Length: 341
Image 1 (cartoon, rainbow, N blue to C red):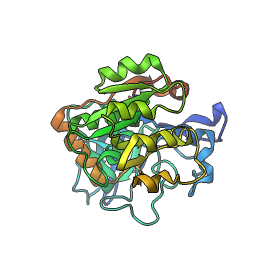
Image 2 (image 1 turned 45 degrees about the horizontal axis):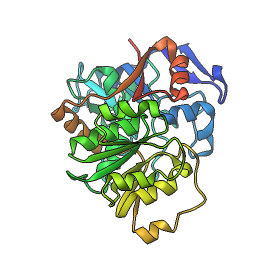
Image 3 (image 1 turned 180 degrees about the horizontal axis):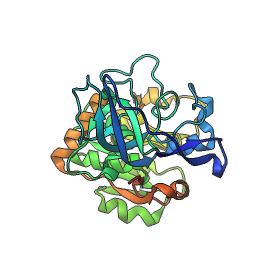
Image 4 (image 1 turned 120 degrees about the vertical axis):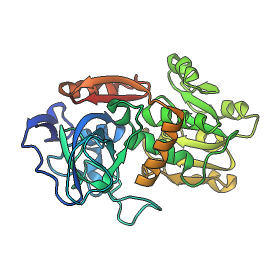
């Protein structure tokens, strides 16, 4: 079978396609999955650049990258009861997190980092506990966007407390998590305020359902426009991905007693917790993607509403380098996916 391995970090040719033997027949509670599609996340780009090596447990030598993928069951072990051959499934980002609070010792880097193979392969062997049935109306490419970006957005909105109709949500930019958060917030009847540093993307965000779109290209100070868009109150939930470049505005855009779901730090980390947190009584909720239970909960909502993930562009399996290049350019609206076969 064909697959990719990360042979070295920080260089364009560090990601290499290779031919290897297919996995053995599944035994016990294992299932063999033919991977039909995978998707790219910022975590995967950071992996190739070597940024994740400093984070425990780091990345395994010559690992198969990409945390996200979907496919179909082709064989199962004798003890499998949750899936059967022919089922369409996605694999969880955190194989060990089934339900409840984040477990002790969780590998925050997820699938494709330590001992769990990534999804940039034609076949993979997994325990049945790691598999989630995907909504029938989704293609494999759409389903492949769910394990990281989709679930992160769902958890950011509904993790500590469910988002309620009429509440206000702030999302940033047009990456996968932000677009999913916009879509999920609208499903819940919330109002969405979206920011972008690309004036050319403002119309697209409006068409996707944003109730107000703010041009943040001039730098800090855009929280004033968020306050105005919420009648002076501020948003109930901020899905924060920007890091230190957006941190101050995010705090001031969030109402006193509101919540900031910390998803990413695209501009790096700040120098400490702002005293505004204390003064405004804001709850900070760090997001580590989510559990299998939350994944299944999200999929039920997606199926009930017929929601379709936003795919910016799809690449063939042989074009993985091009997919990463397109992802890094930052022009995308939604997800970058890879079609396997």
